[in-house]
Image (cartoon, rainbow, N blue to C red; front, side, top):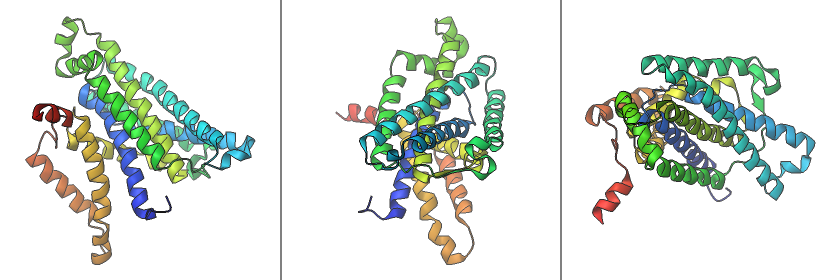
Length: 301
């Protein structure tokens, strides 16, 4: 975007990608109650699959190097869908243990999954290994990112307030009671992981084609933890809260950057953490709790 400052443009892009990640994790953790801390693993699958496909196709069709060409747009859409589907397949495999595990035990499994993916990528030379994968085509732009933001929020909002979404909430509140009422517990849990992983894979593809370089450390435990913070801070079970928290935390980290230049000490993470602690003490259920802005709008009208 030539008319926008590149620094502000990059913040805007990361905000959009974080919105997709936070809302997709909220489907798993907030609406279904499955505590997952390996969401960066799904993101990494999408990032590597889309990047590898783009580079392979670019090597065979050099004309794809121009992002403005219609064929390049079709290619990018195709690799994003492929990235989402690959992540969804992995999400299905990760979702299977959730049939027997929950709470802290499920969290440990998902954490292990994220580390397994990172170590596998670290040792696969075809995707760069420890060196990382560079030269990814710059297909991502603000229209692609926020087009997917709108699509993700729209689809997930329609999902969670439909009959399958109510089944997810029933599982979150009480699995035994939900099963007694005929809710297919197995299907609901796996479906949540598949849907959440699909959109995390899309976010990974958008991220990779914006940054143009990825490595295994980009998708470590800290990345998963950041996404969890966005979900908890916004409100477990509120898509609106996830959107607000994703924007707030992304901007907050950058807003504190000038402080480092003044003090010559990186106090950003300390202040960042203190602000989070204060907010969680004053709003333990998050900014929105389980409410959505649409509910307020309907109530006001």
